[in-house]
Amino acid sequence: MKKKTSLFLSSLYLTLVGFICMGVAKAIPPSQQSSYELMSAENKAMQDDPSLNPAMFWVGDGESLWQQKLGPQNNSCSTCHGDAKKSMRGVATQYPKVIKGKLQTLEGQINQCRVGTQSAPALVYESKDLLALTAFIAFQSKGMPIVVNENSVNAPFLKKGRRSFNERMGQLNLSCAQCHEDRAGLKLGGSSIPQGHPNAYPIYRLEWQTLGSLQRRLRNCMSGVRAQQFEYGSPEMAQLELFLMWRARGLPLESPGVRP
Image (cartoon, rainbow, N blue to C red):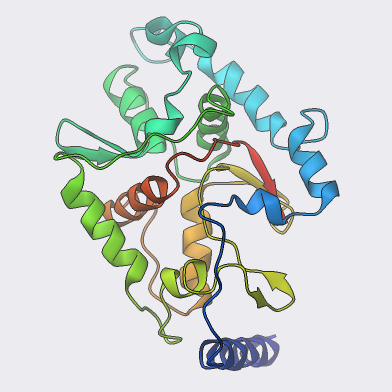
């Protein structure tokens, strides 16, 4: 198994190095394009039809968790926020955002509410319950444009996220920008390179056979270039998420999406 893994990574390395050094002109992608546009008709149909989208099982679980009473105060999410269809509409389009001086992702804010208001333990990143609540809340904003804009409060965090996006990392010495900006629209391994917008997360990836967060996808990319991965829930992850959402501003939220 180790030998096969080593051969695969060596092959990936040679492919990527050759790809970066081809000397071809940069792709000229559309001004903004969701990776939804690059999917097959079958995968698009799976995302568009709630009866076919596997992620809707998590949305249903999230709706149940929204009503679940926890802690000594016996509070649920609905105790404070009421009907999610009204109170959570548009919320996911605004995150990450700075709250009381801290850059907070949507998952981070869910945990902040659990710990601070419900006196319940924080949910583990990539756990079924945290993914379910995140998907349920994000679903209330489906179709609405992302509205993360730069301001005086989030500017320092945005600057750090931009730096992470453009910084070469890992043994392959590649940055996010080299694939998702410089060569978006070109082919790698027979597949089109997307612009890397996060407007469909959490997503159900056919590769994963489960729902996953944006942070899981970012860690996958870091692993792919043999770089040290940012920890789940770390400030570095939140900063990179902020930059990616700012970069995708104006695109409609598709969550929960489906991807190959």
